[in-house]
Amino acid sequence: MKALKTIFIIFLAVIVIFGVAVFIFLKTFDVNKYKPKILQQITKAIGRSADIQSLGLEFLPGQGVILNIKGLSIADNPEFSKENFLTVENINLGINFYSYVTTRQIIVSSLQIQSPKVILIRDKDGKFNVQTFEITKDKVSRNDSAAGAGGLFVREAFAADGSTAEKGPLPALLIKSIRLNSGIVVYKDDSFDPAISLEINQLGLRVDDFSLDKPFEFFIDGSWLSARKNITAQGRGQADITNNALRLTDTKVISDLSDISLEQLLRSLPMLQTAGLQKNLEGQIQANIKEMVVGAKGLMALALEGKLAAGKMKTKYIELPLENIAVNIRMTEKALEVTDSSLDLGKGSIVIQGRIDDYMKAQDFKFNIQADDLDLKEIIAQKDPSVQFEGKLFGKFDTAGSGLSAGPAILDSLKGNGTLEVKEGKLVGINVLKLVLSKISMLPHLSEEIEANLPEKYKAKLNEKDTAFNKIRLNTTIAGHALAVDSAEVLADAFELSGNGQIKFNQELGMETLIAVPADLSKSMAASAQGLEYLLDENGRVSIPVRVSGKIPNLAFYPDLEYLGKRIMVNKGRQELDKVLDKVFKSSEDNQSAPSGTEGQTTTPDGQNQKPPERQIIEDLLDKFLKKSDD
Image (cartoon, rainbow, N blue to C red):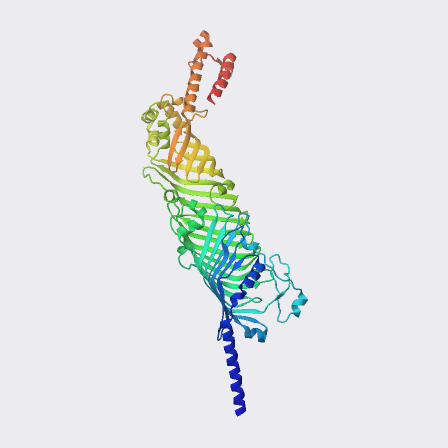
């Protein structure tokens, strides 16, 4: 018994002495003398220069050997940036060597990463800086891997093209705990014009039981365009060292737009500056990533469903905010599809559906947009209370283009067509017909004469202060940075308007139109004002070419005075020539027997008046001449 006790004491003393020796060794061992060799191996492995401020080793009971790395930095490809691709303030790595001796498995008790910063850059050609890393690896055959002591064989590779990945040995590695704090990820994309720059701050990562051959669970949170954390992601991951790839499955991403700073958003996404956003966004984003594979070649596979709910935004171009924004998307590595998406604008709504193909490069898009029951009085800024445009707007557009850049670039490719229809339309404060008549300067006091001499049943139409429209319909195409109006059909009680022109995206309108007054009203107007009969067309209607321009609703109506003056002179000249011809072909006998108003004519057997052939020829020639002058 005494001998057993003595052996135990000796054994315990040996362990203590060994532990003290290891402790003294670790305390006195200078790992920094190996730093040049370590940096050389890192540079050889990734094809980038690296630097480390200092290295340290220490032994902690229960945790094993702790390797401390301070000031790690890895340079970027100089073709992308002169800044470092990666910088890390501090890394603590706890390694359990005892497990490797006993089980041939490397167990890292903990990996703590403090204040890392990664800068991801995508150039104008769509290539990422991470794709230029020159990762080297030893190629080992399947037989070699089976013979390797402690080797671990990866049986399921998930190459994006569906092919079987190269088989090779992997060390048996387990990291019990990974903790990343205060991280920063910067994403710069020069393929957009202007370039975008997004940044995730306060990045945190938690992973338990990380393995190279088994799935692991992770949790990520951080701040996106916000002073506080507003984005989280939780799911499962799996590493594929053989293919230098990472696979995520069953991952949920949640973010709240109300925490996003509008100032930071416009600075990061400058193309949104043209949208005239005035208030912070609202809404909740949820995304479910069924599968995503990211490797050295970029995004290799993706199956994602996402949605934005309860969204809200305000733009300076529309009086009311866009509310109840609901967007549903499906994404693959090649295309983004927008389904069942809508928003409310006042009492009306807008429904949007479409897709973007090759959204990482070409960005070819097609969208269908339908607007229903939009109240123009509510949504259009109408600062002049004396002039208002009212009505309910309905529309449908099919658009297509390529490139999601801001400014003229996207408008260069934007094409589309559609219809706009206004129901219950009214231009308050303007009587369009009366305004146009008042501007026909070659017939002074025309509007007053008509109003004074019209029959009572027609006076009311010119005395109305507003212009009510029974129908407004525009057939349009999108081209040339504007909405081209191919044909316009406008019906009011006192006139019809037709024409074409364009509406710019800032609501500026320019159209060449023709106002035609119904025949019955035209007849009364012509009888009420001298000279107006010269504006009658072949259908007996007063027809007036009018240019409409201005920013809706402050529109100006300018009759084509040059055309009207020419038309008056031509019609009046035709009337005077008729009188001359009457005298030339006047026959004393015919004049004595012919009824009044039929001078220079003969009567056919059926009782119809017929002009002499000579006069008919002359009149036809004069008509052609005058018509040419009229045109």
